[in-house]
Length: 109
Ligand code: 2BA
Image 1 (cartoon, rainbow, N blue to C red):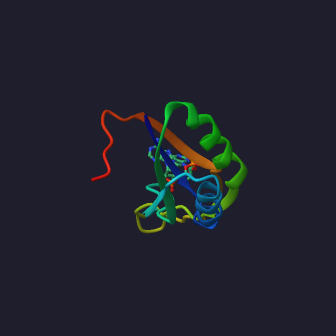
Image 2: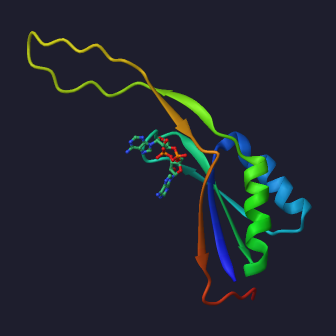
């Protein structure tokens, strides 16, 4: 068995969970946020049999899309007389960051 952990864009999370449920996968959606952009995203985790991992990754691929986001860099600490012109940076986020982790034991009690 494997635990699939997918960090996805908030806007894709609903579509992803619905698509998983439609194919009878049980999933848990957690609210999370990215360390770099500090914006909220979603973490979807599900326990699946080894031979189901590829199907799940296919559903993630179909449901989640890359996006470009603009980031305004933090200004540095300035000395008097120094001047800083902040140029916004473009960052590509996602489609999805996925970890597939072996599960030692799974129980529903
Ligand atoms: P964030 O940490 O907010 O990162 C958002 C996007 O910013 C990343 O997209 C990447 O394009 C860029 N980025 C992140 N760190 C960077 C850095 N040090 N320098 C330059 N650009 C950087 P993704 O790679 O698609 O990641 C989307 C979200 O997935 C991340 O949001 C984070 O929440 C999660 N994530 C990505 N890689 C991870 C990892 N190795 N471990 C845990 N979570 C991860």
